Length: 311
Ligand SMILES: Cc1ncc(COP(=O)(O)O)c(C=O)c1O
Image (tube, rainbow, N blue to C red; front, side):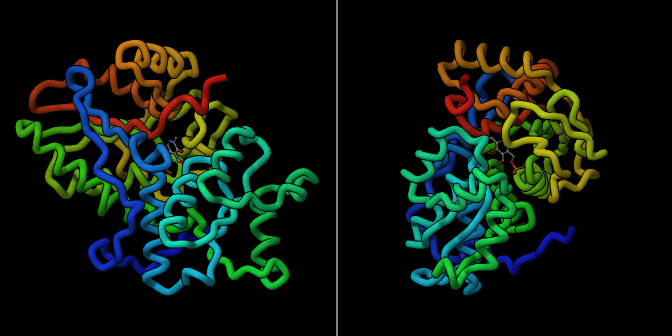
């Protein structure tokens, strides 16, 4: 499978939209453990950064023409919320094929954010979200739409978003800890875009970096081994398309019990419920933070909030 490499316009050349938001906080939430609060982004996760970058870039390239183009994607997850927000800012409609596995609350919320959910009848007859997308792309005239497929698993604009925006934002915030020389970056991968983009930015800022990839117990993305798990967004059943394995120094797996423990203790100590992928990374990051000090800190990402995932 080939990964398209769109022409990337640096952020400064792209018109900034009202959906850009403020830098998310970086806090030393526990001794030695720095957390980037990506859950504070519009739409509640880091994925809005990829969505905004891809949409802005496509507008700059003329691939999306506001007033003419509709964005299409298959996602009921955080990228869907990010896209709804990014498109709304430019007056571009967005059609999402959302698998029936996603909760009714999520579907309703996506609509509240401005997305149109497509292909429900096809999904109910057993089609996959991919098949819904393929059908709509093949029947644009019939649907009275001119589509741009953001295709998050093949659009490297999401890596650029994190390399040019999230990563430099973290680097600027790290100045508050001037003694740090070494960072252990604990992250997970769905597409791999955030891990790769942030890693590249930290490396080019000159930090000695140890990158730890977190996976659910039973998954081994490097070797294409996946099991069903409840950590929506990470180790999603395909090898993360943007992940260069040379960037990874260590892989650690976590059980669902460890994730639930980390989620509960974080909620009780800090009054905030982390999402499942954030809690998985937290459980590893906390262990590694025992060895941290003034010159070496552990950095992880609070990808999103946990309310979605409470059952
Ligand atoms: C909650 C959550 N965590 C982690 C990830 C992984 O992010 P990336 O696609 O940048 O690897 C995602 C991706 O959708 C996500 O929704």
